Length: 123
Image 1 (cartoon, rainbow, N blue to C red):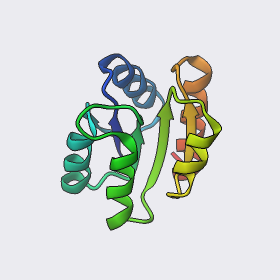
Image 2: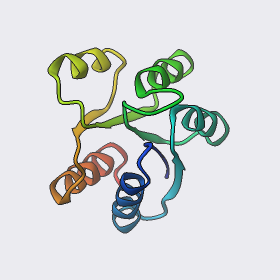
Image 3: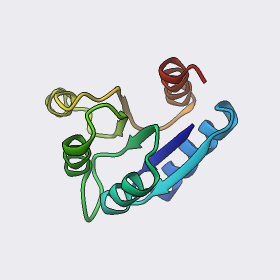
Image 4: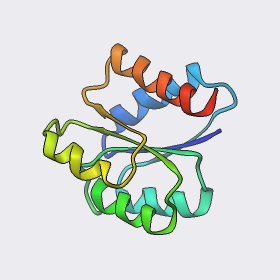
């Protein structure tokens, strides 16, 4: 399985990556620190799943989500954001996201993420 993590925080990317690597066998992990890098990796690497933040420099998560959905309506996307407004969640759910997880990333959120990935992919 190939997972792309797109977040401008190196700390968050590291925590999410470690949680995934420990719990998901045969994982190929890709990392990007903004939407532009994320989109380029998406196009060249064709991941099975994207985990993305919404608030990033250069290209934010909304823009990235819209670009990806223009070319791929089926890829699984988990949004991981500190933006807890219901309106934000409703707005991005229109794009057919797999799940929305609120930051900060902690043990509970790690378990939630792993359960979603295992549930979607049988990993």
